[in-house]
Length: 424
Image 1 (cartoon, rainbow, N blue to C red):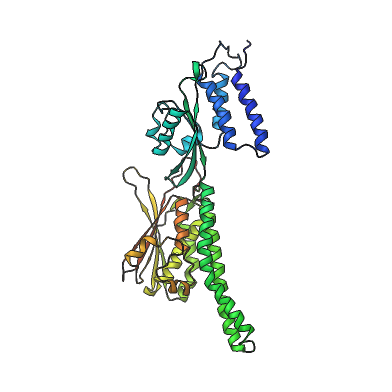
Image 2: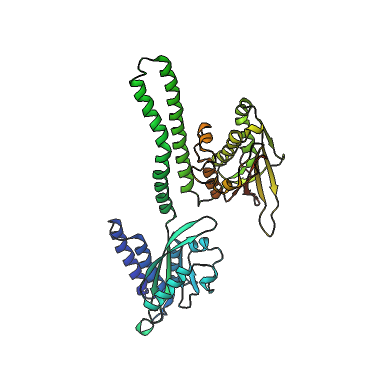
């Protein structure tokens, strides 16, 4: 059996090849390539054939054009959604379904995408026929930013073009915006934090080159201070780099099963010598059963390390720091969770400071923090790491009664044949 290949498929391929050559030379934006090919494919899908087409005997099922369209949509990495003039969802690719898990065909888009700017933009494109771009920010499970290109696709077989349908192409701008935010924050905060130790180093160097040139005692004293300031700058830069790496991957959830109890036990063993040196009783309380979570071992180790170090630095005057793990049963259909608590018996934190403790460079007592060697980035690292692990940090404190830092993470439940938690 012989059939004529639909003309729109050949046109789509030709346009894709031509635009691909132009894009390789830097002349055409990737989104325009996708939009052009998609417009031709979807246009062919929506229009009825002008003449009967006999399907090849080697494909007795789905028509070839449907298979081509589905393959193209499935391989577009960014979310693509097609709606009709009633703003009812007609088609969506896998990336769109991952972004909007509840998305269903033949249901109004407003049921799944509560974004007035996008819905208003669709109405405007339907009214004017002119494409436009709007911004959209998805808040859950982590914040992601998109530029939404909204374009009209006329019905090809209706005289005069007919009523248009609408295609939404969502370009993910999350990483680009985070990079810009990080750049601005780094310039503003790092320059301020580095100015003090750099000024101290320059002052001592000038003193050693001048009045204290031949003073051996002063030289030893100044070199010790300079070493301390250089170490402070090193810690600051290390923490900034760690925070930057975590923020870049914050929207990508870890997939490795781990035993949080093993990680906590390892960290407590590592910190035990320092605790003894400071006269602090550091203890771990955890059930014998594993505490399985999904995560990255080094990042979770850093979370517990930051919390324990903070407790020993600022709450160690109470002489007791306790790390404990608990399994929390979910309610209202929520999954079970694993909670890690770091509790100290120190002086506590005033209520007005608690909401701001996870801000970069925020310190309750600036002088004390710098004297203790803090960079002001520890709890910011904890917050962003837990965002990536789909967890949460809760701080409870009362003046004169100590502080408790609570970390909650979703409990990992292995399916049949699933991987067991990795040993710490």
